[in-house]
Image (cartoon, rainbow, N blue to C red; front, side, top):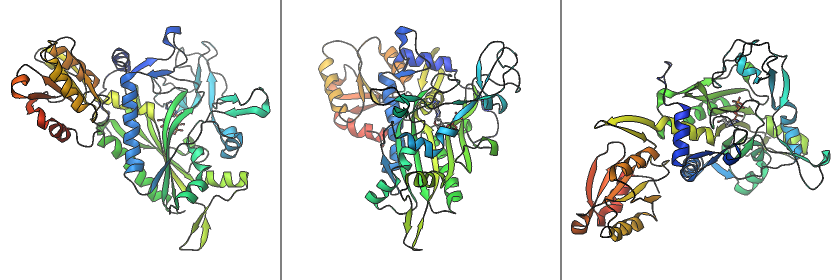
Length: 452
Ligand code: ATP
């Protein structure tokens, strides 16, 4: 981490156009002109997103004894949102420009938070300099109706965070797993917020996916766990290859804190539009469990065998947006370099995240190479996400694989028919080594450790 301003990386437009061209991300409902900053993940994007979710799940659940998973529903009793404080508190303060009618979040104007190029002195419209209206409260939860009648009694909300599904299942998880404090419950899934301003590609959207973990601890130990999770989560990004100089931790000012928080830090990334939140780590105190216990009349506490007392645990929460994470890994991996007078674009994605791990490339389309190339493909495919590509020149095929971040290419050429060996080419170094087909799986697993 560094306090100096890093050199800006690739622009959002360049990444968005690569995403469309190669099939990572498409504008939703594009044939109808698009719809309200919604995005669809294409064949490569869905792989990248799944790999990111899998890497998080592995680090948070699979590799640990103290965290279990959950998958709760998006629609919940409206009483959940009443008790959690979301119905009365969850919203943003909105100001409108009296001249151009554009709408802004008040906190983004006054805190100079990075939201595109919206940075202005409070009071004047950052777009046209016009006068701004008085702020009014805007509720950001999506409302819908459950059942055939659209009446107040049938009102339900799309969840604006996955965390409440965890709190209301606290007792179920505790009783079924017999976990001891400290322990956590992790969840991934869609959340919805009727944001006032969206944009910057997939940075802020109204439908998005989250990865959240509620870590329940003994009261009085939350500060220590808060520090632990700040560091642990930062390290996760660095382990997966994000440049440390484009990451920083920022502690919230008191007036920025959410209604449930006694302290929050953001892991910020240096996006093309400046430093902005990637993940939030919050101390949620015992606010949520207490609020749900009071509203439901159910006991939501933990029996501490040591002290013989019932205690309400405190909570530390790392909360991250999957889509924002996809954007960071793409931006951070993007590089352009010159190789023998030609420009090469590559995504230096961590192999665990790369959508395609290996491309099998027969040197020519001639029938003589096809059966062997297919055999090599069939050998690798059950173990690794593998592509077979025999169209166009070998140089162009390498460039294409570089641009989608494929760590290894395996080339089958005419010598293969004689020596039963193939060439492995590495994305980053472009180094090539010849290996016998009989030893190919070993050679690959050496180069792609922990990748399946
Ligand atoms: P902001 O103040 O920017 O609206 P927040 O602090 O309310 O965000 P959290 O409630 O802490 O956000 O959400 C946790 C994470 O979920 C964020 O760090 C971000 O990665 C992701 N996230 C939140 N809102 C959105 C959104 N509208 N689009 C995409 N990702 C989002």
